[in-house]
Structure formats: C-alpha cells, structure tokens
Image 1: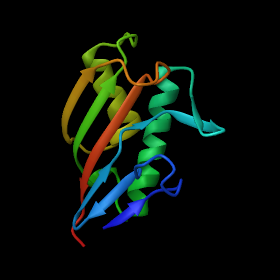
Image 2: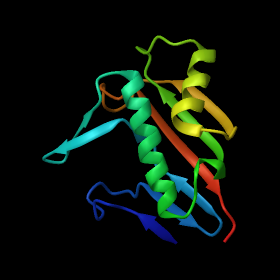
Image 3: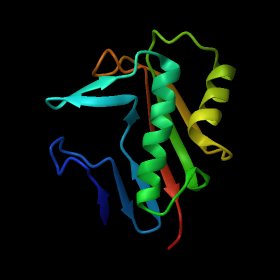
Length: 128
C-alpha cells in the first residue's frame, strides 16, 4: 500500500491510500492552514467546497488519478448550510467531481469541528 501522509503520521491517518487499483481518501474539508497543529477553515461553504476540490485533486494526482477515476463519494454537509439538493449537486460537479458521476451519498451532520461546513470522501479506481 502507498500512503499520502504529508504530516508524517501526526494526525493518526493518511489523507489517501492506494490499495491495488483503488485509491481511498479520508474525509477532506476546506482547510486553509494549520496554526500549531490546529486546522483553520475557509469562512464560507463555497470557499470550503473549492478547497475540498483542490485538496482532492492533489491527493488523487499523488496516485496518478484524476476526478474521472472517482467511482464513489460520501459528502457530509453541516446542518447550518442552507442549500437545496439540486444546487448542492451542481456545486459538487463544479468544484469537486468535474465531469464524472460517481455513486453518491450525502448526509447532513454536525462534524467534530463546528467550522467544517462540508467534507468529501471518495474512492477512485485506476487499474495499474
């Protein structure tokens, strides 16, 4: 297995792992920076979603994948985010999935950090 762990195990989990032909990501959020190990997040849902897309592209590229390789996704949306299902799907296509249509699960949940408005976890498939 190959791991994408830019923090060297500091958080107890990798951002992504390649296992054979599959790449699994952790739940990626709209982190802008870390202050003494504490994440800071973009202020708006739209900004966080754009960052999620950027973080996801970087993780996938590490394993020679793109968003076209995404086959499954789970999205956690903070209850405070006021967005219709259709608009959410449009924003996910625009900022995260590009031109692919993975299987998709979406749930509204309060996350461990109240500043997290959206998290996305994906599985990609890219045969070696």
